[in-house]
Length: 478
Image 1: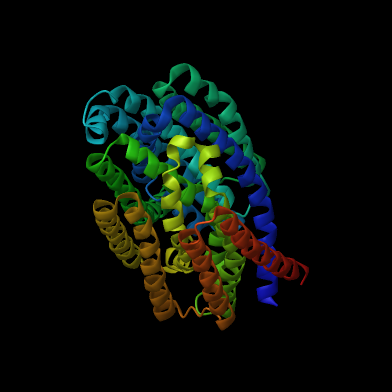
Image 2: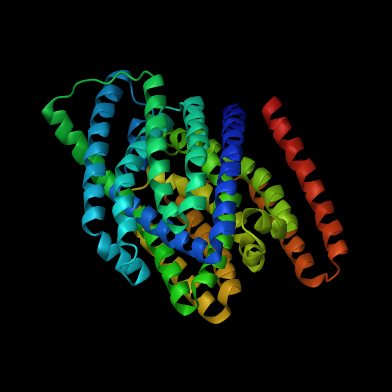
């Protein structure tokens, strides 16, 4: 019975978040397309470095608060929830101000580190203002997520994206490279305002707190947040270092091609992970260890994830060249090979990601840190070796190999420490769909006639799509 309830809750949440993320994706595609058309691969390369820098900075500034807020507030009672909400907002404001000031002061050093010159000092000075606003937006979004305010969270996300596109699209056209930086500021302001309004609409009752409670809880929050912050920081750091390595080993143009492929794989295709995690993480955090309900939650999420990701990846195999043209332009078609090489990595990720949240929600501080350092080190090493010897296709294969290693390691940890058992039904479905994806990729490699390629893969796609939709419909009805 628990498994059926979990399935229905998951599908209801997915329905809401998928609709919102599809609209957000359209806005994002429009923004990326215009950046590619007006600024070319050089501009996309600059944007990639700025985004990597911004995300790296935010991982330090937010101090792991998004995950900590969800982990600590999920399942809280009204009295303790009100007190913790008050403290969480104070911490968000303080960390946001400190982060903004730090970026402004060290803007010249950040430009030198990222671009090897001081030409973008102005950019980091402007970006420093958006740091504070983004911190507030992330914080309020996490509070909504922790309390499963799904509709409010989804609406805020949608409205923020819509207004952000309207405000920022003209910036690319009129200001060129500078417009990229102005975009950071506009989007951060819009997101912070929209999520604050959503937070107020939730009608949470904040409560006054004593100094002792503030001191104890804020200390606990910061300590836990530091652990998550380090984990997030290492992830963004290796992406940042890898992009600098690719830029140094080749040029900005090649970096732009890599970023195009990586963005499609890690952002657009992997959108499904973001959608699922919004509701999955809070529910998982509330479950008790070593219970049937906990295992049911994991297996339910894994099963639905397989049903969703397989047809999506097959569709990407069919449409990859067209997706690149739509999202970017013909200059970026070299990224199609990267997409094909990295697709299996996305499939492995549905397994490693599902069980990886067990470690995030229940793991000890040491386990989370050691996990992050180990896997991110492997990610960087494998990608450097792959790109050094085989360029973009080497980086793509490194992506797939990395997530296979990540899958094996996470399954060993969660099975050993948390008694996670993936059902035989799920494992059989996982390996069967893996063989189907490999077969589709082999058709792309070895069948030279495009028409035959297309017919074969579309046939496979339609069978898998029908199967997945039928299973999802059955889960929802039962």
